[in-house]
Image: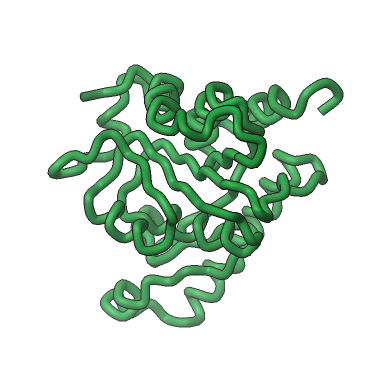
Amino acid sequence: MRYRNRSEAGARLAELLEGYAGRGNVVVLGLARGGIVVAAEVARRLDAPLDVMLVRKLGAPGNPELAIGAVAEGGEPLVNRTFVHYLEVPEEYLEREIERQVEILERRSEIYRRGRDMLPLRNRIVILVDDGLATGSTAEASVAAAGEHGPRKIVFAAPVASRQGLERLRESADEVVCPLVPEDLQAVGYYYEDFNPVTDEDVIRILKEFSGPGG
């Protein structure tokens, strides 16, 4: 099974989340950047407000694509101490990497929200959406960060995920929704016919669409 694009994947997720449609206490958060396109389709079909959840992986020395942890806005960094120990990552490197990624989060928050605060999450049902789930590091960090705001419930939804990532996430999220769980997950982009990069301009455009007139 492959999705045509992120919007089709979002439509499929919305079908599985239809029990949350039209409820006044639901907020959809898309993990930037790829997840915001999927989340926008979910929010449209559930008639729910949309915002972005900013999260960054902590990259290993010499291999930034290998996550040794993650940090999301408003949350504490989550560090995979097993990886850190195995790779013999110096604490000085880890501290610098956390600082660097937090600075990127702060810059992107200003770019995307133009100074406004995140939508209120207290006592809300928060649906976190990404375009795929591999190791689960960034997803777990986003769930932890959302939990700091006192939501009633946290749902994590992704169109495709690894079994390992799902099992890891079920320990932190109240509900996990995923229609496609391959036996052996390839790169997330493999499960999309169109997996073009999502730009900052795309994120800004989508958020503006949901902010209403003058947003």
